[in-house]
Length: 268
Image (cartoon, rainbow, N blue to C red; front, side, top):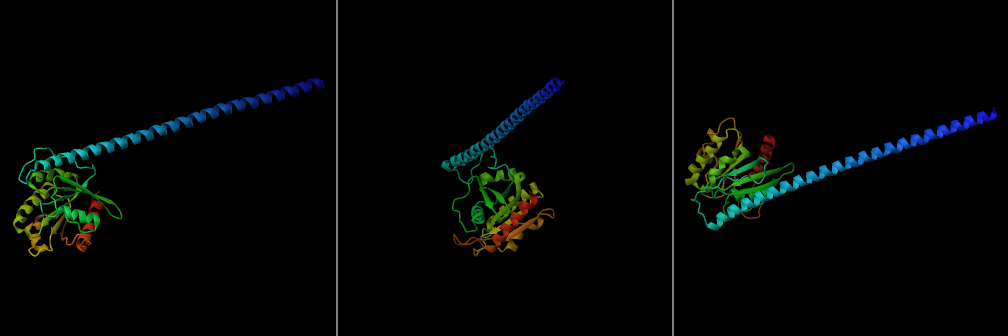
């Protein structure tokens, strides 16, 4: 009788051990499954990271090709020595960036490039050579980065101006305040632009105010018929000038820069 009880207890112990071993095997299987899932997830994440890296690299390569294409096109034009009265038969190029930009337009000689470089550095920087084609500049502020696109002001490039209005956050139009004979021509092109886009914010720079022959900004307002711009558009007029290279930009230009940053932020 006692022997039977002992055997029963031993059998129960053996059964219990077997259950423990079975449980251990199950946990081991589950552990492998979890490990496999972790490995699969890591592999998927690696593939996604690799794909994202390839897409970024492809985008950089594409932008680089566009930049080189643009440079080669206008370099070829400069080497041919085309004068300002020549005409372009090429189709307009895309801007360097796909984001919307602040357009900087105006007749050749108005001082667009000098204004743009001075705004970027907060120091007066005069430009000697006129812009041939497109000129893109990024200007950093405390809160954001602004992308500017200047398009040449000589006759071959004015036909491109309206093409880029739809890509603009706002329009900066620069005029030479001392070149009285060309103000009617500047007015003509400005009103063509604002007629093509009735809501694009407008900032006018009455540039070269330091010259003796310069019209006062009230005269520029009248000469450009800015009262006809319309009530649905934000419009601002600044008198600007650039004196000695390396000097700080005038306070009016700093005020204009702050306003441009605010306008760009409002329309984005």
